[in-house]
Structures are given as structure tokens and as C-alpha cells.
Image 1: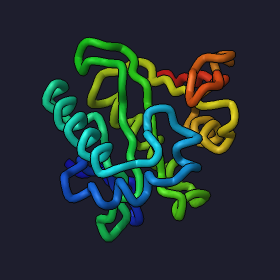
Image 2: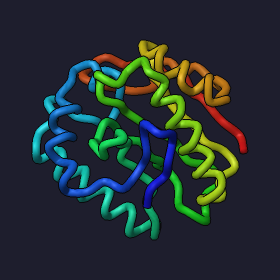
Image 3: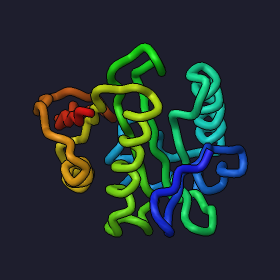
Length: 175
């Protein structure tokens, strides 16, 4: 499966050959600090677990719901996908995403999230897509706002990560 975003970026399935790029890009404290489920340091074992989980979820859903973000030369530069739903049964899902730091600030993630949400509405039959963003991550909130998401709430002490509780902004996008 290949989803074209623009002439610079496309989405495809994750594969075992992505392991070196996963460990390279995700061994970044700034990505860790802005995401909930990506461990740090990011090890080969973490990459193996992720790739196995994606394969299992793809099989359960009978289609990919997590995608590798790739540059024009097919290099892995990020990841995105949906959680908390069952294709064909659920009306909503949560979107999540990350992008390797050298690619920040170029509008890539806004283009990816727009196209990804369109895909989810059309292919998964969703009526709503949600996203949680840590309060200390305004860049991610801006991506969502540019994609038409609206803030639906501010969740105080909603997540626990490395000791402190973290506030989060809840965003929603309706079909």
C-alpha cells in the first residue's frame, strides 16, 4: 500500500528493513518528550517490538492502520497511525504521529495528517478522529489546527510520564 502525500513524501507499510532508521530517529530526547508511547533510549528491541505489534494490528484490522512516512527516496522519516478502534465497528479513532527532527518545520506533518485523516474517513468509515497533545507541544497542536481539528478540552494531569503528571489538549475532527 502506498499513499501519496506530495512529490516529497508518501506513506507505506512498515517493514523489517525500517529497524535501523527507527532506532536512529527515535533515539531523540525531543521526540520522546513530545510522545506518550515511544521509549527512550530507543533500542533494537523496542524497534522489534514495534514492528511485531504493527504486523499483529495489521492482521487484526485486515489492513494497515499504521504507516511509515517516507521521503522521495523511500527513506523512513516518521510514522503515523490510528489506535483505539476496530475497522468497520468503531465510529472514532485516535491519530498519532512522529517525525524525525531534521524534517521538522517544513509542513510535512500537516500534509501527512490531512491526507491520513481523509484516508481514515474514506477507508475506515470513521465519523470522528481525536488526538491528544501534551500542553508543552504547541507545534503538534498547530499541525492539528491547520488540518481542521478543534480543541475540545484541556485535560489536567491526564498522563503520567516519568514521574510527573502531564496536561494534555484534546482535539477532534469530524467527518
